[in-house]
Length: 146
Image (cartoon, rainbow, N blue to C red):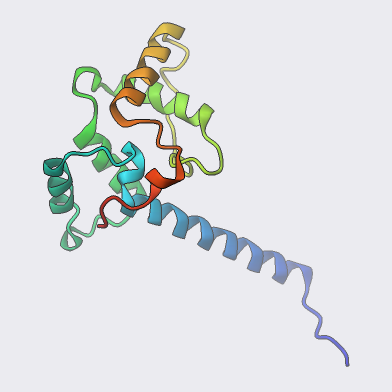
């Protein structure tokens, strides 16, 4: 029995499409959960407010939009500057692994070189105190579903 020939280019396009679909599905699933950002330590009031704001009728469906919304609502008030988040994101980008809850997001690094090691350490220390490390699989289970 003769097998049908599939040109190499067609196969590679199929592979690329599948990869992109997987990436999109993974990113959107993470964003819908949102608990992955903070290891599920939100209080009840915060959770209710978040559910209200991301109500389905508002159509905040892209991962990028949801992440921006999350950071806007839950930035650390005493350090809640854009530079603080940029430094923190840069540290997390360096630390991340394939299984990391922070995987698949864009991280700004514009402030990394301007801050000394102590600031970076304090930023991460504070983040872990507030939210935990969020690396344990059990914390990545949905804490609330949008």
